[in-house]
Image 1 (spheres, one colour):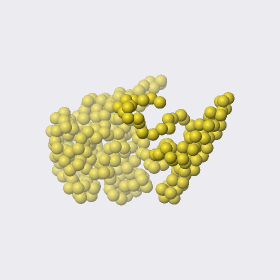
Image 2: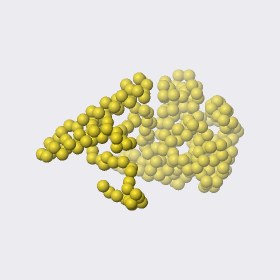
Image 3: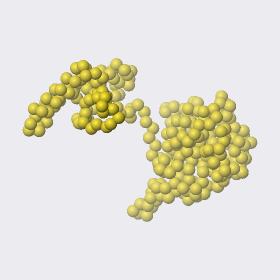
Length: 310
């Protein structure tokens, strides 16, 4: 599916009604839908405050992000003052211009239900468009410092002279902020999370160095352990390994049976615990051997409270 990107200054007041339709669809069940009149007042104050995603084939509005810089008092209220979410109640007088050191606040992120999911690509398209627009605004108003390439052209962002905050009202919103390097600062009424992206995290965001992980990216490290000394299944392996090492006076490499044993047990556990479709995608790799202390947590009475290095 292909999308058309619209920036705030390209919308016009009539288009805000389309945005409000999404707002009602997404936030009505939460009782958080905004008022068109409030949106119009803030838009009149600053038009560079929207990124909108349109279905390129049908022209339907698929999603949007609404954000704007707020003054110091409002920023303080959001981050550590008000116990209620600052949202559609924000007045134009609480907004400010894009200037170095400004505090940008995300008031809304919404995608229609039919455009959610990886298949549609709407979430990624909206994210990329928002980051691109942030960079455009940052360059226009001096909100970032960039690296200089050898040819004199400007490269990646190396310093951000602003911050971006937001308050989540849903699991989807929390995932969106977390995926964009926002850090939770506090929890307010109705378990809503106040988050912020700043400094190095914001630099990574502006450089679009996002990494959306799935189970295919998971890496597990499995270590052998024993609960009781009588656990011969594991202890015998360590004993045989020790004997091999002790008998290898010339320092020649001698393959241990431990890796084969562990990989065999690991494959059995994966096949047993995971669905077939997941198990088929998991690769097991033996990375090599390392030295470690094989012991237990049983200590002599006279050494409790002291650290003993064996």
